Image 1 (tube, rainbow, N blue to C red):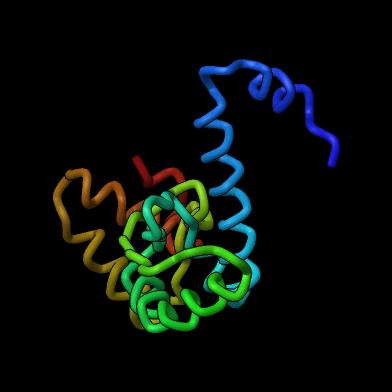
Image 2 (cartoon, helix red, strand yellow):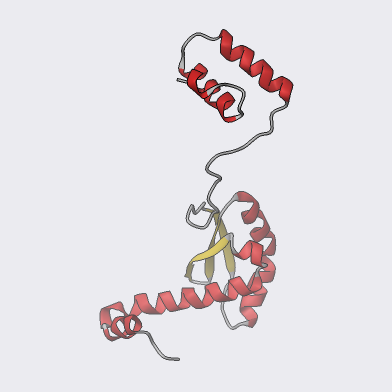
Length: 151
């Protein structure tokens, strides 16, 4: 296996040897865990530490953490068969915004004609306020209010 330039630089520095070894171990362990888990669950979990036989996994949410906890005995056996001495697995919930999908910029809803008519009557009966302005913009987007009337 050919080392990248950064790996060669880090490996040459004697003081960084423990850090480089730990990073390699975590990378190898992460690859095995990703291989063991289903694709959906693997995207919701990551290895964050391994020390003295204890592996720590971070789950993106509580449902993923519950599934991981159920798989802990099987995962320990799998890693043992791969020559890793993992005696326990700790699962922690740690949401990670960078892994989650971006939310929709604006939600849409289908409003019935009677609902829009009721909202228009409400708009016309309201005094000037930020709520009235927001309702006016909603009705204008739906084509139920002339744009000139919207502040």
